[in-house]
Length: 172
Image (cartoon, rainbow, N blue to C red; front, side):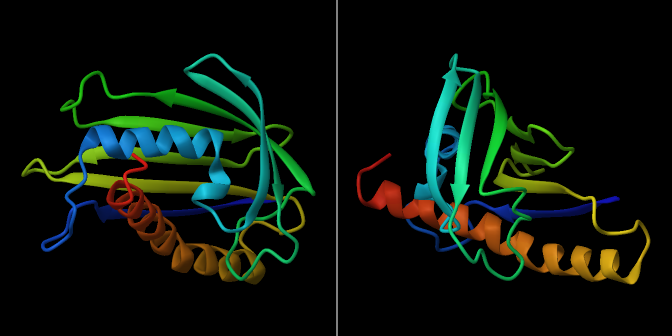
């Protein structure tokens, strides 16, 4: 058994990006992603919110058949996740985090909003995928880690692009 790690960070508003996204818009989208992930992740077919107290969400997601190269390991046809949302304390606080913890295994994803040294808005995704079938330190583990690390930046960029499109369309 091993846990495969990957992470990626992207500048939310690179030069020329339009519209410029605010912390409030980005966080609103992340909260929406916790409850309606299929709007952001093509690999998810459906999502049922089982519990939601405003700060913690228990959801059950069903993945589409086939997944894809570099997609998250599908633990089963349906996966339950508990998402803890630690929102920024104000619209210009600069940081917030969502922790996605799979129930029944050690897989975990963090979506982190932060700021850089010049106040620029950053989005980071970290991934910890449990693989019971892969031996720690094996060639297979190395191959899988490289695969996940190659796809991690696309996940962050895809989220930012989706948020930007939602803002353009007046959905956020």
